[in-house]
Image (cartoon, rainbow, N blue to C red; front, side, top):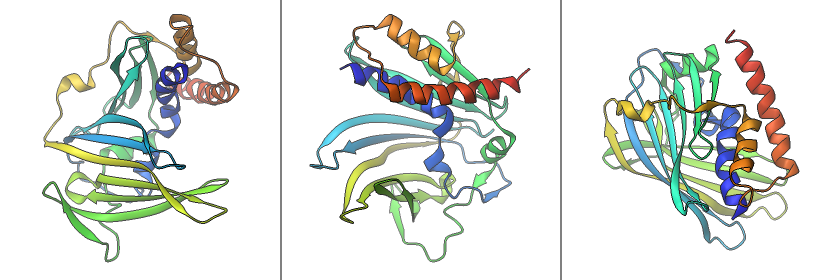
Length: 259
């Protein structure tokens, strides 16, 4: 129960460094025309690599505006309130800012977007249009192409397969992640993402709204506020502090450029 609460908020912290990392693999090649605008609802399921059982499921909303701004909104479960709440990260391409918003602590973590990242937001992705003879299919009426790659780790390799829609700037409508053991060589399915709804056109303005009454906090301050508000439902682990230390360093460095 304790970890369920803190892991949700740690997602906001790690998003400062890893937001869209998987989405951006291979996305260096871009076209200059404006990105497609749409809203997509995705269900993510995570499975145990031991027995294959689903132990975690959540709904994610992705939205892209004509100006290149992006939204990532996930429904997470709060043990204390016994209900789902929304964690939100916004990349505002026009302002050149990233906002990570946590309703549990009424916190907002604001950092500038680098020029390289902003340029990527303002352009269309070519990651699924420059493949040589890719496998093709159709999902929800959209033509999709198969895109795969691997991410090596210490004792495993993550194998990722996505079916991306060129009409949606190569946004993946279906994704599967396998964990390949470095010792046995066997691969097991550990995560799936599947889009169930797609709405074309500019997303609703309220999706990109920033709470005016929230307090600006660094990553570590968000977690300390969480401990303060919910002392019986959160715990402290050394690995969390390592992540926070790194996130705080990036936060301070990034905000120094705002002055």
